[in-house]
Image: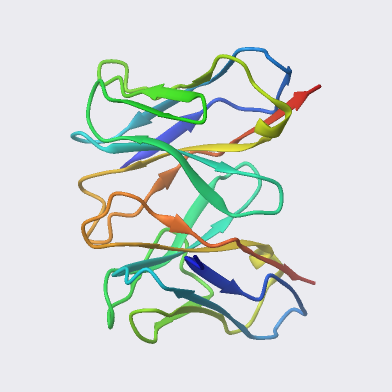
Length: 112
Length: 115
């Protein structure tokens, strides 16, 4: 049971570089999310996609872009990475009627 | 807006001790409440949930009761094990959080259980 799969698991970037975090879910869920986790701050929502073809900003969207490529995939792009974007990133998904959000295993990103 | 306030850690207990991690929330209406657990190097896993007042969620010996009158959802376990060492997150999903109905998380509580 794959669930929510994120890649890469670890990445080190230099300031100003760009990269894309990939996320795919095999549960036929409609909604997908990107969160970042920082010490002492819990998880904060970056962007979400309620359904294929739609995306909306969350609590901390600045410096990020997203693409809902199809129902399965939801990618997060950092166009010009900054040290403040050093964090652990989690992708998640939820079915339209479901009450539970399922998380991927996380992507550890360091910007130097 | 919605918010979750969680007991600050870290919490260190001996094996077989009683665990309580406090969680209170602010939200309109009747949100759904969750506890997630994150083991070292892993993603978040749903531990338990409650969707209406007075519901008790339970799983793996952990319990939490949805208390509307005190806006609380405290996590308890009668006898912790070393394998329970993890970070625990309280979260809510409100009725008025947009069409995506995303989760609002507390800051997390690190639990370490010593043998």
